[in-house]
Length: 337
Ligand SMILES: Cc1cc2nc3c(=O)[nH]c(=O)nc-3n(C[C@H](O)[C@H](O)[C@H](O)COP(=O)(O)O)c2cc1C
Image 1: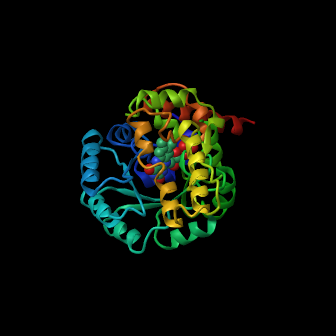
Image 2: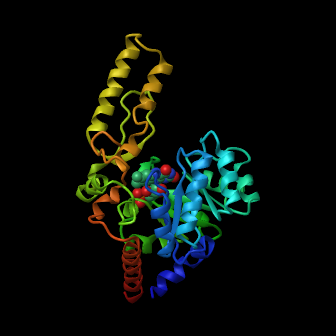
């Protein structure tokens, strides 16, 4: 089944140790034992989102995921986590096969520490130059993620990143494409451009096996592409890290908060450090409130623009089968033309 897709995904699937080169990108609070094991059991590649977990919590999560699947899965670590090297040690102890480093350039020694454990390292490449540098520093594969994606985003779209990076790197290296992929036709396109595989988040966030709160899932089913907006920075002095999420009361209040803090700064009511801290802290705990507590008004309902293609709860295996069927049909149609 899906022979054309299988052929184009062979390099990526071989690297991941999965049937299909389809990663479910780590999603904090969502990508825990249940979703991760379901993805891997269905032939994709699940990735645990470590997020702000302590080494002890990560240890428990890896063990619990192992108990639910015999298939390979990865762990996503955020590079600025204060205990990054302890987290790497936890992954090493569990002989995790793939570690994904997210959230910035990996600090000195981190790629080496992961490779010493025998694991493969996957890094995010925001530009071609950085992609080349990461590969020179030992990254085994790259993910290029466009601004259509849910969660923290860069400024460039997936289609442009793919055109800039795949022709340069994809023949000799493994590059996975992420951001805005909702259907298999898009997967076919990126595979034909040389991608080793793809990474999706939004499309899997509301799978039956996802523990996300029913109200979080309902918000996804109701939303269209234009509801998934990037956070807006109001004042050049107060940096805002761009995050794509469904617009709600929280996103409106965030704009109001920035204006209020900027005014306080102007009047000398607070200093720059305090002002920036207030902005930074606004969303603290907000993703958890949305995913776990179901507060979709004040919480951060991170979602990509492909959210409009997520219309109901489906088991992971069905989502993967749909994507593969669409990809295969698109490839067959092109051959026939
Ligand atoms: C709810 C949510 C939470 C996310 N959390 C993380 C995270 O903790 N670490 C990370 O590297 N990426 C995170 N992402 C990005 C995904 O791993 C994935 O790369 C992205 O969703 C792919 O784009 P798509 O949403 O258009 O499919 C998150 C995405 C969503 C939707």
